[in-house]
Length: 217
Image 1 (cartoon, one colour):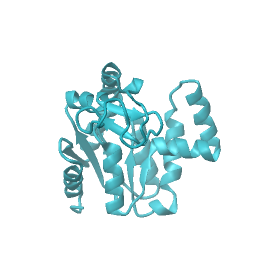
Image 2 (image 1 turned 90 degrees about the vertical axis):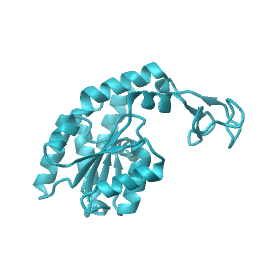
Image 3 (image 1 turned 120 degrees about the vertical axis):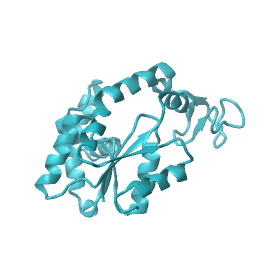
Image 4 (image 1 turned 180 degrees about the vertical axis):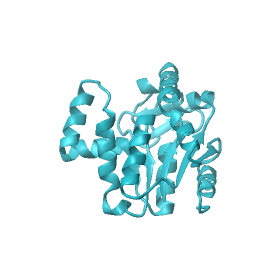
């Protein structure tokens, strides 16, 4: 099963991608993780990405596509994969289609996680991170700490990341609408898209996603 997962920031793509990949027995391929892995391993592509990111630039499509293609060619992805964060635009989507076609393959499904814009802003702007351990994440409404501003786990200070502030979130949403959202129509023309409401508890969204797949999950 070869799947692309799309949706706006705050839709829960990372959470759902990990759960779905585990249930389907395919690797979860995240471009963010690919960038970090290539940088830490010191690959040629990783060195290019590190240099670009250090200067505050955007990673060119050709580098992103090359990293993704290399990862999809690994043995554990032979029977399928779940792509999270790739493709991000029409150009990357066409490159992905061409790369798969060369191998005699095609995508099986595109899962579009749908969340209203106001809900996205509430989800992200309410998030608070622990300065001692970024794995400790709270939310002022959905998962508040026992003591305001203090991590329940380690006692570290909780703070709001700059890119989680409401104005920044709306800018990120604007970029998503402009660059990434068009791929949904691109894939819809191929009959691949299933739109799933992500306004539900995590297990329910996972169930909806599995039921939307061609095999029913």
